[in-house]
Image 1 (cartoon, rainbow, N blue to C red):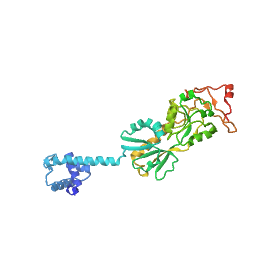
Image 2: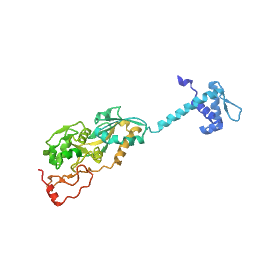
Image 3: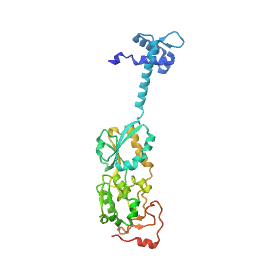
Image 4: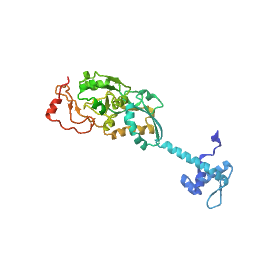
Amino acid sequence: MISGRLPPLNPLRAFEATARHGSVTAAARELNVTHGAISHQIKALEAMLDVQLFERGAQRLKLTPQGALLLPTVSKAFQDIASTTALIKRPTTSGELTVTCVPALLSLWLIPRMNQFTEQYPDIRLTLIASNESDHLRSSDVDVCVLYGHGNWTDCWIRLWTTLKLFPVASPTLLNMRPLRSVRDLRNHVLLHGDDGREWNTWLAAADATEHARGAHHFMSDARLSTEAAVFGQGVALGDTITASHLIAKGELIVPFDLTVPANFAFYVACRNEVRNAPIVKVFIDWLFASLENDTIREPQTSARRIIRRRNGKVSAPERLAASPTAPTTRPRRPDRSQKRRAKIDIR
């Protein structure tokens, strides 16, 4: 075996420290042993190698040619051992991290903030996969999953990231061509679905407007596609308080009504139990939650219309305010009483 041909560790340490300091006394002090112990270890090493490592008799110890040949190798070996030991003790925040994320959240929230993560952890290389498949939780090739769902996945670590509120969104160009003056005008618009239709049904039921959604419907595999279709003026989609916020702030989408409903599901962060405490996984999950806390999530700013409920619980026609659909952040003027009376027309 190789280990049988190697000198013992303690004599090598005594030799390296003595050669570096040029003094047995200094080496003994560094290694916290006696002067005699250092001398004994060096003599044992010389006997094993059958060479003399130091020239005796001078005030400062001097290496022989054999000692000068041995020192660089021994010094490098101890430096490598010390460096590797430090890496083992220190949390590792470098390397590759694979994350799957809900497509809409990945495109519209995570990617715009990637630079913030990179600035904090420049040595972490991210692989981002657009997916909402919970099967990734069982894959050894995936480190962290950000999922939209019920949160009841088993045999893994799960934490609620945030709940959502849903509301209709449309492009200003579309609303200029085909206004949404009331909920009943939805029958003249294409409804864009990012799911099987349940979320739009929830909103329409809350608005008491299910009978007004008889127009065209397009179904897409996820909310990212329905949101992008809305940006391009293809219809009216359901936005949410996380992924649609910056599109609304930039004026690319408008919120025509002030009614929001809770989403059927929520966003969760999840991973396999065995990787949860890995430093590289921990820093990413901590960053996700810290970034969410730093975001100011506000109720969506409506463009011009409110859904007004009467005392009997019925929905009346949305009140038309003075703001332009192309300027959703402008504070509307208060309508005069005659305008307000004309606006409250029952849509039943």
